[in-house]
Amino acid sequence: MPETTEAAVIVDVADGVAEITFGNGPLNLLTHELRERLGAAVRSVGRDSSVRVVLLAGAGTRAFSVGSDVKELQATQARGTWRARALHELALYETVDRLTKPTVAAIQGYCLGGGLELALACDLRVCGAEAEFGFPEVRLGVFPSGGGTERLPRLIGEARAKELMLLGSRIDAAEAGRLGLVNRVAPRGGGLEAGRALAREVARQPTLAAQAIVRVVEFGRDRPLREGSEAAIAALEGLGRSVDLPEGIAAFLEKRPPRFSHD
Image (cartoon, rainbow, N blue to C red; front, side):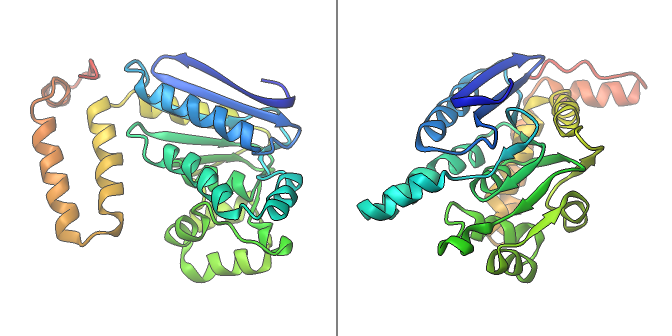
């Protein structure tokens, strides 16, 4: 989808991958309207049994998203509705985070503020070498309240996350890769294609096993090791009743590619 002048979301489903492209101006501002449309699209593909992986991408090449429209922040301040706004933002990121299907963010250009919070809500992140990341909110007198203060420290460590948020500074793609903020760094301008390639790789894996990985990792994120291990065992028992587990074992022993039915 090319750059748009108004909030727009396009969903394309092929070979088990739902590619959700969102656009709003050259920098893909996450306005109230765009968050509504994007959340609805994510919920829709979550209910689609043909979808095994979800790919999120910003329209155009200048930005994945730079986050909020500052004019909307000004209106929020005038109305005194910060809590309602924060809950609305959080609802989108939690919709993505709670999706049981693996999610991939394909990042090109700027990934800032709420755009970075959206990317952090995904399971995997891929970017082009030109990408820039950061939370500049502190320079406006606010902070990333849509889960950024929780997800970023868990991913790159508390001290480095605090530094980025306190200074409102940016890091480049190479540093994002070193910190583990992104899984893969593609050549300049190659973030979308690299994201698509990774999504297709994940979609080839047996669906129930992939979903179990996402579910168990997220369940154990804030729980004692024993509780996470018990969840893993329960999930493994469920996979034992699937069609794909015996097929995977048989294919390995017979030295052939597996033919997963995703059931």
